[in-house]
Image (tube, rainbow, N blue to C red; front, top):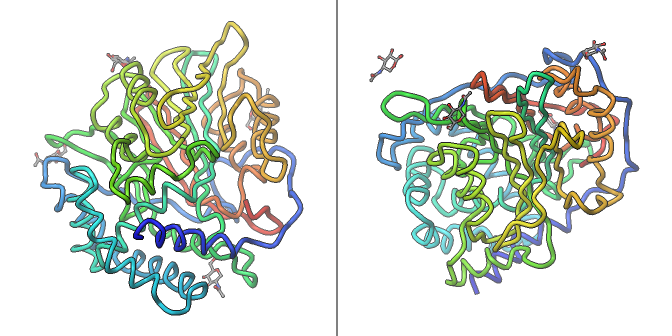
Length: 392
Ligand SMILES: *[C@@H]1O[C@H](CO)[C@@H](O)[C@H](O)[C@H]1NC(C)=O
Ligand SMILES: *[C@@H]1O[C@H](CO)[C@@H](O)[C@H](O)[C@H]1NC(C)=O
Ligand SMILES: *[C@@H]1O[C@H](CO)[C@@H](O)[C@H](O)[C@H]1NC(C)=O
Ligand SMILES: *[C@@H]1O[C@H](CO)[C@@H](O)[C@H](O)[C@H]1NC(C)=O
């Protein structure tokens, strides 16, 4: 019952899909870095999360300063829900039944969510819903490239909010716009020293983008798959709980793995609730891979291979051995720009150009992250895609 209601709740949004707009592409951009102008909406503030604190205390600073932004985002989700099911029943369900789900989630994530609810004043069920959402509505582009000196660059666009309320007047996605003010960079510390860093939406405890300085870099992209889909998430709600939430796995890998090889093994072998792509970079030549996951195992891993001329790997939301959906092809334009730049001129700067080229940059793009493992560097920028621009 709870599962069915959640499914209705999530599917209700899909009916609000955007009107069709023909693919809008442009020539590969150049000279976009350092970010400025209409595609750059601002820098993202840094915060510290001290892992030595009790999980319920860790997010307090962030939630104290981002409370209003989180409330405003949650209100926008409720408005969407009410527009589809005007009785208010869906919101009742979230407030009444989802809080019970928090105790089925693994430690420390359950305790962290309770702390976030307390610090922000957002009801616990809504915090849980917000955390589940990310497992479902992300479409992205991630890439890892090796420069001629063997230096690894890992970058991504985070595109989020597909089907979540197209604003006709603004020609933008309601939820995508509401998420931008929630962006934070987080320095996770133990004994007052950085363990890993990530770019995150305040209120969300899983990880989609992160670096373990000098060891590895990691991003996750959604994998839509008929065999697997969201069945695992429904099973979890219904009580069969033998897989791991995808973004909890990335968080625990960033927190606990100490090398590329160890991270690769965990990301390849851990049983998951739904399929996913993990894009993992190491700290020496040739260490960069796309891990395509079914719920149980890794399929056709693709690694950098300089001898074969494969100096970069790039993943959107389609299996690398298949053609992307023609309506949603960010892979071809991104690869075209990478190939045009060539390995000899690849850098954080030129990678930012690739991620600034429409439709790799689109109406769902919330942020762009650039990471350089050897320098222990992560920088992220809030993005905007001025019209005319593809909705996804
Ligand atoms: C390398 O990239 C920079 C920055 O985009 C560009 O200005 C320059 O012309 C490129 N050089 C070559 C040889 O492609
Ligand atoms: C349109 O979007 C801007 C930000 O992109 C926002 O400030 C404004 O409130 C939006 N307008 C409407 C009618 O939603
Ligand atoms: C943590 O490190 C910073 C900078 O190294 C220092 O200023 C601060 O006093 C340290 N805090 C504690 C609690 O050790
Ligand atoms: C690469 O990572 C390994 C494992 O964490 C570490 O031992 C090694 O020192 C790192 N190398 C560099 C160049 O940072």
